[in-house]
Image (cartoon, rainbow, N blue to C red; front, side, top):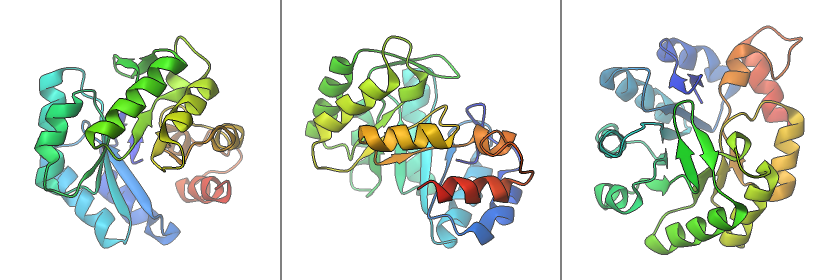
Length: 217
């Protein structure tokens, strides 16, 4: 994710140009931190690089979240993550081919924290799949009421053999990536840990951080 502290980095176009030699296959950004035209250009750069594009909704009001879904349609992202206004969001996305992965549980605030039990995550995930979502965007390591890996395992139970369990937020080490994998996660997002250099503290470039992250998967 071309994001830091839950916002798209302001120099995201320059960063995208810088990291293209890494040949990432999945690149995303948030719905805040950059203006519409910048996000439009960024999405185009991502797709022209051959990667799948993602936008994650971190808006804190229902109205703003639905407006972000409209922006996703306007700029043509491949996958929309986050938000809790599931049924109206699906109506906005209808016919576009954009895959939707909402937040299960009770996400609150910005940066976003996650309330809810494993039972809540399992129930929400089953409900979202029944409504037509592609999966869920689980803020496992932002949990305030349960163990992150218990939440991940609950999402895995709800999905069964179907892929679509994306874990987002505070994935900042090889150990956390391995733990999420073992708990049944299909994919994860990472942003701040790469930009801060905290994923591989002894390396200085963003490219080196990304290469080390890829080596873990």
